[in-house]
Length: 215
Image 1 (cartoon, rainbow, N blue to C red):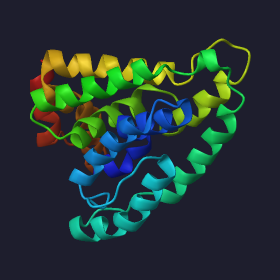
Image 2: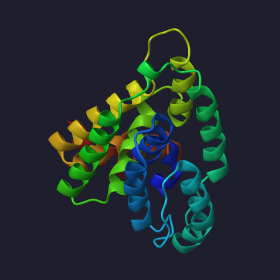
Image 3: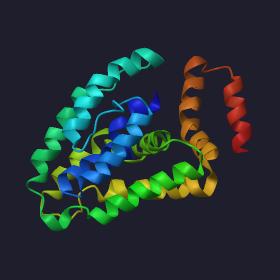
């Protein structure tokens, strides 16, 4: 469910969007679409080579997937609005501030390789990285479109550079600590908040467990 809720901050969405607007090639988008097919989010018998095609496919499949797993549907309408904003803003970004195709391919290959090492699907790994991005970056859910607006100004900032750097750092942490330890660390603040919400005066079992882990 975390992967659905945090999808717009995930590498699978961000890399697909960047591949489309930067001209990195349809092959990368096809590979990313393949990871979504594995999760039942896209029709396995359809080819997807653009973000518009992926959005149309997600719209068709997300409702069925949500019903099947009792999860909230993917906000395709929100993704489409963000995509239109990105397309509009990218027209004003100088070519030298667009991410190079090699950088996008490197990010994708690193994600696939680490997912295989950790014995997780690409989508699962991407979802963990999305949760991290939401917590680490201001306005994380809309960072890509906001980055496009910033790069279009005369600041010299690379479009999506901060987000791509964050993904690489996150993969490095997962590689160092292992996916279970990393994910536990990401969830710990949420578990603490939930424990305090249920009982502000009584120390719960969850809090005592978390205290033992941190001591």
